[in-house]
Image (cartoon, rainbow, N blue to C red; front, side):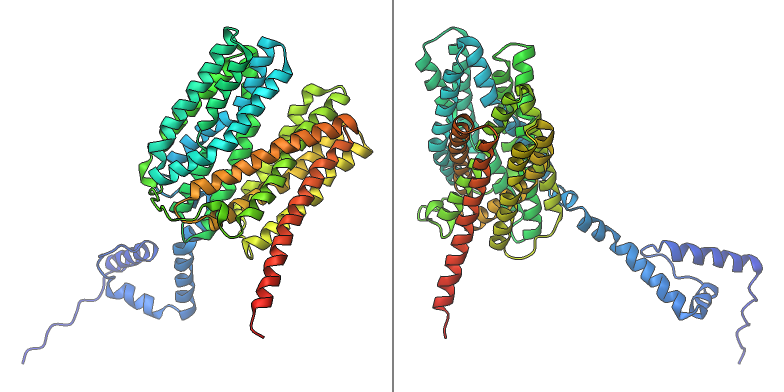
Length: 472
């Protein structure tokens, strides 16, 4: 029987091509590519096992590098969620005027009527009306959807703002200013609606939701840092009504962009029998703690202005307060990168304890040094405890709010903060006037301590009840 001819001896050129092909295959394997020739296969089989394992490990590291990068950049992963960047852009545009309207109203009314008392009274009336109306608007948002309610509610609020501008410009009676500014209370809680979207998109992913809450808190700080500066600039450079009008345009434009992102909107929760958030277990003490936390913010603002005025540098008060907001913004972004450890209830107590301790720094700086140069870094450091505390508190609000009523729960939290800001402003102003500007810094430190006692006391009571019900 004839035998097949022996294979020809490999030529140098063939061997060289095989080596080149083997090198390309080793660096970038392609799906469906032809297998290497016998020479390359022999070289691969004859390579030491250690070399093969090192190449395998290198390939594994290369494949795992994107996941590692994502874990090191939680904000990049957060905004990789489809639609997140679009609704966040609209949210920021609509949120910036929240820091503009109050300052614009005070400048506009005080400049036209020559009375800061009237301007402050009108602003306080709007704040009180918001505390009453905002939960009702949020309840409608939960029941019928964000786009269906938020846009007409914003339009009605802008009509109130426009009426206020016209009443001030044409010298209408004082009572019309109160009525017009009270109509702006239908402005939806854009921060609460944004947090509700994150909670809907990131349900089942507590780590990413923690990062989202941290970003939202940093956005709050940034908007309330830039809003007053922008309002004062527009009212001073252009005309007194410019801040209110610009804020209205930004609010409506941002709200339209935000509500246009229907894919990320939480579905309406038509649950007629769902318990109201105010009755949810753990919500009343949490809202009381937020009330005390708001008193920290309100009193710190008034006391700092009074202290700067006593030093003869009242115009520098805004810059010094901006340092506190900057510290809070930076701490919020950093806190979002860190992975939370332990239950949120325990973290909330720790954050409040840190805020109580750090709020003593402005008091020490004012009482010992007595200068703005010493107060500025103290406020910067004290502000770093604000954002982590608020992030953890909002996480607890999201968890304790009944399903389908998240916007209402978030709005109740904001209402508690606003009520605390009003009470803190009154208490801080009284202390600065009847005691001394430096002694006024005891009010924010005391308010932080009250928030800590409320939260720690509730946690201790729950632990005692749980232990007493445990089987022995």
